[in-house]
Image (cartoon, rainbow, N blue to C red):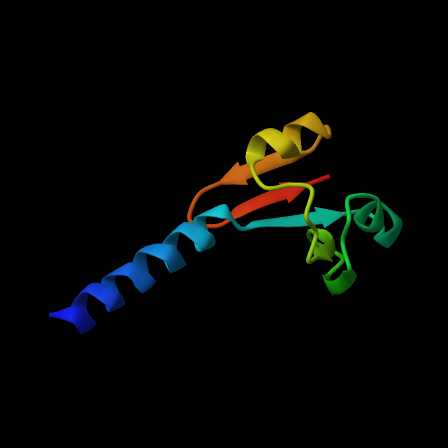
Length: 81
């Protein structure tokens, strides 16, 4: 029973962290750096822009719109600056 409780706790914590993750995209790497991104990814330049990897500023759609971004909130939360 103890293992089941621990497993359940780990699953609930993992789900909470996954819900809090926001993927942020910007037109340039400089904008990513301005919001605290450690790295810039260039995987989707033509579609989404530069990915702002490990950014710490935008944690919700409200944070995104405060920075004049466009947010999509679904299974994955994405912010387009």
